[in-house]
Image 1 (cartoon, rainbow, N blue to C red):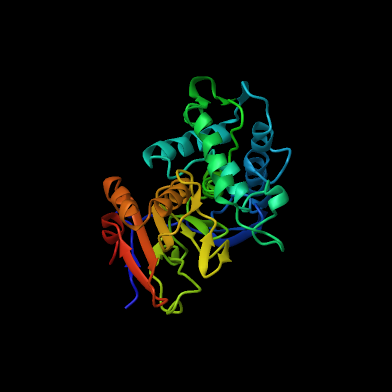
Image 2 (image 1 turned 90 degrees about the vertical axis):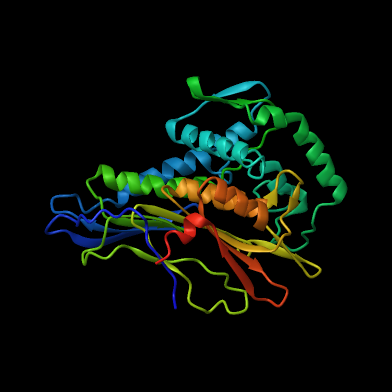
Length: 345
């Protein structure tokens, strides 16, 4: 029997009479975005430009691939320089640093140098990208040297933000990477843009991360299938479905970006505390939260923490999370936090 998750609070309100279902979409962050919505009468049907502008602004601020983005300029700025932050960047870095503190450093937005060292970032340099011919994993000595450099700036990295004046300090050598939170935030900005234009019933998505509100024209919520693990035995089985009614969902998985080293799968999720890719066998962690920024960052932090510590973290903080752990026989072992189980019907 397929598992079904429903939020504990339901708003029974329907879209205004005469609303019609519409679908919008475009490109952003190297992937596609989409919006399905109930368009009320009198609301401008041409929302594509407004939604795309929201995403373009986030990309201009937080992309670690665009050399002229605010984030890229910060990463190459001289030591001791302060950088004024627009509201979007400030909101994201403030939350990212909070998750870093809460997780004991399992998630760190200032781990861009580590991401580059392992070939998963834009600054991979002579070592090449993980998916390019000639790539090789970094040596133990190079990882140790990077950890030593990070230790000298670690105390500064968690005191970068001057929230009162909305500015960020570059103490020297800090490399931000917001890829584990910016896409979720972009999903939230799509939702907020629709709400500013009078749309209250919608499902928005960027690259598999989603947020929903209200219901469809038939009164049904926006049903979404929870992401499975495509390369595991039994992966074709039915996945749970969730009613994204005032909820967002994000999944961190080891099957998206990885390379093989001998028989070992080396995923793109890195532990900033050890300098190594995670190796505890978690294939995926899915998180449900009120915002997609939360779901995005927490799914990454919990993945790094691992099956036991990650579950304890989710239990302490009432995070709705599902864990899929790889078994030696190629199958998956599923577990879920109490907050996740509370939504099962």
